[in-house]
Amino acid sequence: MSTSAAVPTALIVHAHPEAQSFSTAQMATAAQALRDAGYRVDVLDLYADAWAPVLGREEFAPVEGHFKPQAEQQRAVEEGTLDAAVKNHLDRLLAADLLVLSFPLWWFSLPAVLKGWVDRVFVMGAVFGGDYGFLEDGALAGKRAMLLLTTGGAAERFRPGGAYGSMDDFLFHIHRGMLEFVGYRVLDPVITYGPARMTDEERAGALGAVGEAVARVAAGREPAVR
Image (cartoon, rainbow, N blue to C red; front, side, top):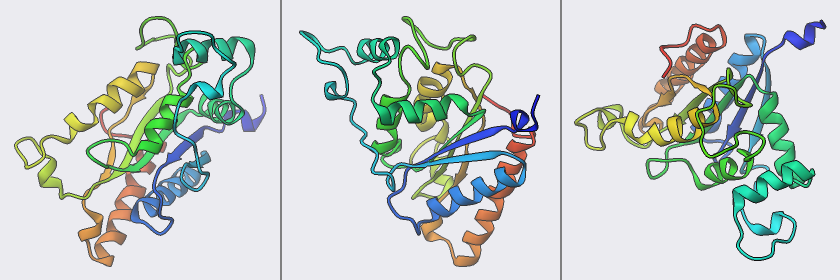
């Protein structure tokens, strides 16, 4: 076996429109921590790449009658006719041992471009199949996934009983409905709360904490998984 075959791969899918944002700096910090730990890091910057987020019938072969997106995804996989951009991202997803979704929490959820990436790249017939998910033998079973995010509000607002409610509640549909659904073992999220309200010194400290948290993940010493 070649040495390169043993090198783990992390795919970071980043969704922030500003290259100078704290979110982007946080992503770069995480990427460097993974590289320092021996990972090969593949970054998809959705805004920089002008990723088209809409899953529509135009990316498939002509369909007569009722359009069923997931059925067309499966047909495209079987016939080798997946959209070229989707196929490229799908191949990179399947090659990764660790998936990191990097984003600012907008309206308590994913930015639209990242949700659209999931819509288009979590392809039925390649990532999952059948009438149900949570497969132990699916294409992504045994792989790990985590969220790397920022918020506008302070940490105390996202606690049970806080002004917004528990962060776990906001992330449940991502953790359970997207990542666990396709077989991932989901790690605890790495979150920076309210970086826009921090001083430069506090932001630097927050980036240091992100690097340390991601280094623990890379070393297999991450906090308790879901």
